[in-house]
Length: 116
Length: 113
Image (cartoon, rainbow over the protein chains, first blue to last red):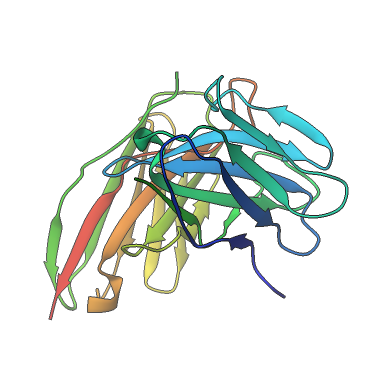
């Protein structure tokens, strides 16, 4: 049973370019979460999605960031016009159908974004 | 706003000793508590989850929860050098959000051979 998959694992962008981060949840999981880990900081919640729905995007910056989880294909976290402050590790997690408070989130390997 | 506090460390213990990691949280209605281990440059890996007051044991790991004191801890018995990592405390539930994990900044544990 494959775990959460993320690609690319490392991404280098110049300021002003776009970054697209992909996440495929574990088999049987329909809930996807994105977290960001800035250098020397803890993991911070960004957005929670189910298939074709954004449930909670309260942790995502209002500008330049967007996320989607289409009916077919992986979840995408998109960062437009990247700035150096966007350099971080972006982790995707997934959980099974029932998203209760006891539900466990399993993390992917992360995408490390470096903005030059 | 939920907060989760951990000592940043580093916590250094000799091989074979007991490592004790502590965490406090601010949201009294939090319901679920998790310990993740994160090796440098890697992703968080779930070690333990606990939902009820008391102790929960799994191999060399014991999680302890005290909701009245808003305190959760992780004990690692017979510590091994391979346990050297950052341990993240995470809290979920309550406040209308039963899916959002709130993490502490983590405690760096070093186990010396």
